[in-house]
Structures are given as C-alpha cells and as structure tokens.
Image (cartoon, rainbow, N blue to C red; front, side):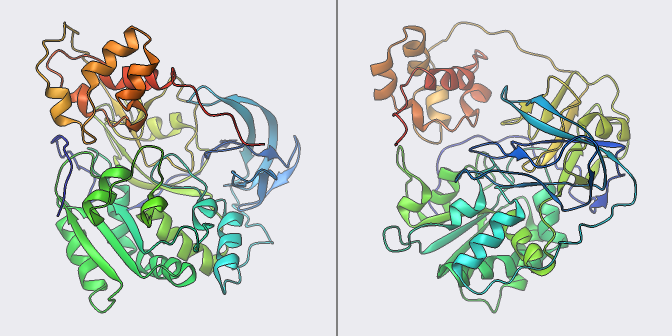
Length: 431
C-alpha cells in the first residue's frame, strides 16, 4: 500500500464500545437553512405553522443545494436570521416540539430503478456528505460517465481523529445497511470496484466487514495504517488506489468517487423508508463531560447546550463541532446539531502553549501529507506575496493541522495556511 506522510495522534476512542442510543427529544430545535456547501435554502414555513417529522421546511431552485426537513413535530415559533458557526448568516426555523413525533403523511419509500431516479431520491432526502464539508450528495452522483468515467468507489470509514467513534458504531451496528448502500451506488452508477477503507485501530470492524463481504467480489476491505489524516480525501484516495488528486482536481478527475460510510448506509435506509435526513449519529466525549458519554442518534437542530446538560459538562473551556484536529470551536452553545455533525467534544482545561520563533527545523515540511512547505507559506503570507503563495501550492492545503501539531515552536501554521488561501484571487463565476 502506498501512504503519504502524517502524524501519530493519541487513540482516545473511549466511546467505541458504547452502543448507539436515542437522545432525549429537546423542547426546541433550531434548524438552519444552510447545512451544506452551496446555496442556502429558503424557508417554506412561517411562524404558527404546524410541522411533522420529515416534512420539507426549506428548499431552493439552486443547483448546488439540498432541501431541509423537520426533525420533530411541533409548532414553528419563528423564522429568523441565524449566525452560523462559520460566520455566515442564513434563515433558521425555530420549532417548539410537541413530544408526539408525528411522521409526515407524505413519507414513503422512493421508487429507484436507474441512475436518474437514484439521484432524484437522494436529492429529496436532503442528503449531504455526512463526514466532511457537507457537499450535496446528489451533485456528486450526477456526474457525466462518458466525460468522467469512474471505476472505483472509495468508502471512507477511517475515522482517524481522536475521540470520534460514530462511524465505527455505524459499521458495528448496521453493517448490512452499509454494504447494501454501497451495492446500490455501484449498481445504478455502474461503478465496478469499491474500496471500503478502515483504519487499523478498528480490528473488530475490519473483521466484521471482511466477513460480511466475503462473497462480494466488487468490494475490497482496505486496512489503512493508523496515521492521521488517513480520512482526508486526497490521502485516502492515494492510500486506497495510488492515484494522486492534483491541485484544482476532484476525485472524479482520477476516476474515483469518495463517500463517507454513514452516507452509504443512509442511502439504503432512505430507499427502504423514505424518511429524509432528520437525525445524526454523533459521539459525545471530552474531559468536561462527567456522565453519559457515548454515541447517540440526535435530532438535527438540537441545541448543543442540551448535549452538554445531558452529559453534565462542568464549565467546559472549549466545545468543538467534530474532532480536536479539524473541528470548529463553538462560540455559542445554542448552535445546533447539523447534518454533518459527527461529534461534540467538550474539554475542561485548555492549555495553549506559548508560540516561539521558528527554528527552521523542517518538522512541518516532513509531516505534511501533501509535501507542502508551511514555513515558507508563513513567510510568503506575512509578505502578502501572492505569486509566492501560488508557487508554494497553498491551495492544496487541506487544513489537517499536522504542521501545527508537530511544530516544536507551537506556531499556528495551519491557521496561517488558511488565511493565505484568502489572498489567492478566485476565478470569476461562469455566467
């Protein structure tokens, strides 16, 4: 197997043996109309409306988007502007739950018979990538097989960040849904090969999936080395296939489609039930949580404060969407669970090391999976030298944080890389 550079982070999978449980229904949910890459949705409901579980409450005609559905039954108490954790503003629907969880009468299993009906069903489900940036899945599936033939489906079950175990529990608890979701995608999109990639620190999941796929020739179980960031798109494609995703390229340019393991399982479950994406399996963990750490199915829109209260989080100094390497620090615990939330971590003590001068040791370069030069990017950013930043391929940076983690001077290199990207002019949108 070919592998890229990276780092070794602590395992810290304390919740890996915690079977997924249903999280208590909150009194209120906040459902933003932007939970995916692309155009935000427009709310389809107004204050005073009664809504049901699975009812579509947001949509748009924009190509790059995905509809939003209610995760609860109850009454819409407001529709108002909402500041997301990434700094963007969109509408959000605030719903007071009635406790009944009445299912929308329109819910029914879709009829799927070919590629186009699969794509249409996936769009109606509201599915966007469940393990990353929230790319609308129907867009990913709707590729031109003549211009861009895809021969390999890479299923990302690496889950290489510490603490997070939600995808692991997906494999352990619902292996059949994972496999049948993969086979559906392969069948209707005509993708002959699948690489189901699992990091080596999950031996039970590897053994289980090998057993379940023993008679399925089109699916190979790939054991990835235990090294961060194996789950990053460019890294996992290289590890699984040896193919390199170049600057400005997508996996499809190399004949590959990458899909999170929970995304594959959801496609199968939606095909069977017609229930859209209204809840997420997430991990609750971290030193500030004093009880009930584990994995839960949580209604989308549940305020993070509800999760902190349930786990009796004691004065957390840091609360994260996602993992400690690439997660987002929350400024407000009334932010809600989103479609791509895979963990909420709360830490009691956060000790930020003192930043000192660069000693030119080259550790950041030796650990970068993509062979970038963070120390040189930092210098070019300070000089606002756009040409140098282009030469240094800063746009290739996937912000995995390996450089910052490994730097003995504790410099904020990953943060600088991200800021440096903002100096590169973007091409004008096509009319």
